[in-house]
Image (cartoon, rainbow, N blue to C red; front, side, top):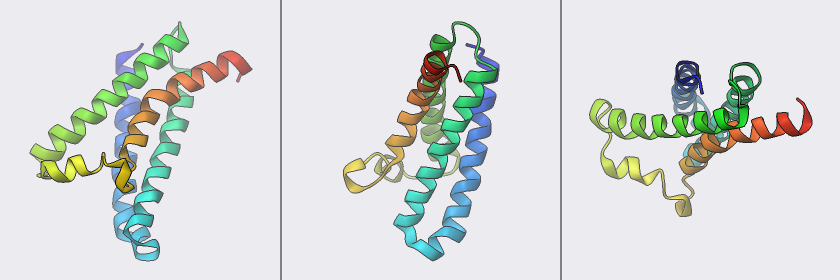
Length: 134
């Protein structure tokens, strides 16, 4: 795994996620409500992760590609957790309860799917490219 390139991909996706969150809160929620906006933001960032992982795997992942993709997915996952809890709480001032509430999938909160996609999609794309050739 190329740590620097993997981290740059994660950082760009975080910037897109922040912009997406702002757009979802300020624009989308006016038309489809708060929960609809939550669904939109989740689907959008999952699509960004899929596309970002596809680009990473096809253009930047060193050999062996599958192991590199898996390591990259784990890096993205742990960077996201760190960012969410460290920056979310200590920099942005979100209370722990609010941060932990996003993990309650039984209450319709889908943040866990975003984190899962960070681990799964790089490896899935590496597997698909190895299996299907593109």
